[in-house]
Image 1 (cartoon, rainbow, N blue to C red):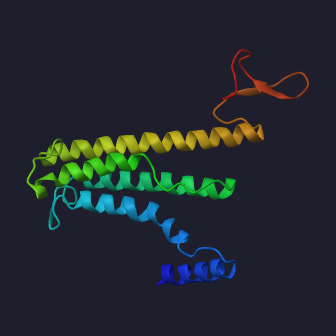
Image 2: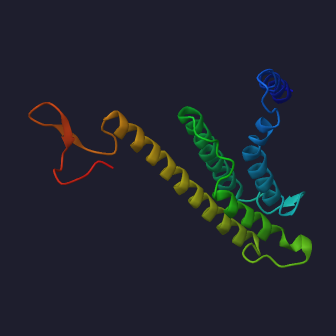
Amino acid sequence: MLMSSSYLNVRRARHSNHRSSVSPLLLLLPFIFPSAIQIVWLLHPRYNNSWIIDSPAFLPFLCAWGLQFAHQVGRMILAHVTSTPFPLWDWIWIWSFLGAVDANLPKIGLSPLVQKSPKHTLIFVWVTFAISFFAYARFVTLVIRDITNYLGIACFTVRKRDEKGLWKNAQPDSKVL
């Protein structure tokens, strides 16, 4: 209900400005598409007997999904703040898509390439979690580094004041990243 009323407000505002009311719907795709991928993967091999939900793979699966979602939302916030185009896709979805397709290959009569057993599914989910973690950590580190360098404050670096009271790197030959 809240989403539909929010969309109606956006639709009215865009219509009054003679702008398309469909384009805001397209901006929901970055939430719908990865959620659909994860749900399809989660339902492997059957919707009432998942190898992920009732296993030790469930927690790392949810954490990977959460990190992927956080990465996408962070990119959207950054796009909004910097007035750049909103990101409509994320490369990590390819990995999740491959995981979902591989897990569901038996539904079309083929054997999975990787997730042939609950143990292999667990390993693939943990690898997905690791990739999601490092992708998000890299994103956060780059954003923090860009902001602190722009503001001229020390973060991820050790700086000291020179004789004029200006901040400089503690190591004379190092560069600010």
